[in-house]
Length: 238
Image 1 (cartoon, rainbow, N blue to C red):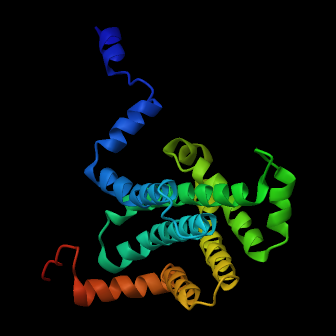
Image 2: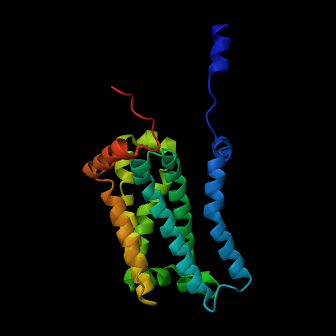
Image 3: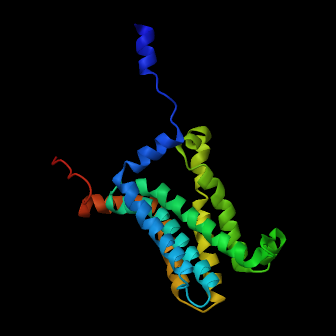
């Protein structure tokens, strides 16, 4: 009987399909997926229907990069949102936003590779790296991509368990990646036309990083608890 109960109580190892089913069973996952993938569908439609402006490659390069930056900044904003509002559901958005951001980074790099490395129907890797090293915005973008790769690979719970405390240390790279991505965007658009938009992104990212400083976070939480009290139960009267 003990053996039988032991067999029935044993858990089967979780497969990728099991994880996918569990993820898709959550309504929030569907909302995030649709919101993040809809712009990609629009870009593909515009490209196939020749509606992506007179220079579709430049348009796709800028748009995929901009969407990637938006998603990475939103991922970075999740913890400050919890600090400010105590809306803890925001922590569940951090990982998917980061992964969808990485997807757009890959698309961004793919368009750049196609534009700079396609020769005689094949990709010339040497030409791609040559295009990267000769432009400062490309160097910054490629650096951000290289730093993002280990974060995307180790984003699963399995890797989190394997790495232990080192996992948090590794994923603090995002504090470097997002500012580098903003710098990449600033240099990219400056090479096309001078715009105030990169400055706005820089200010937003700076504020999000400042909000993570322990003293600042504690001050915000104390203020919220004492004066605002939204998203949390009221304190019991003493």
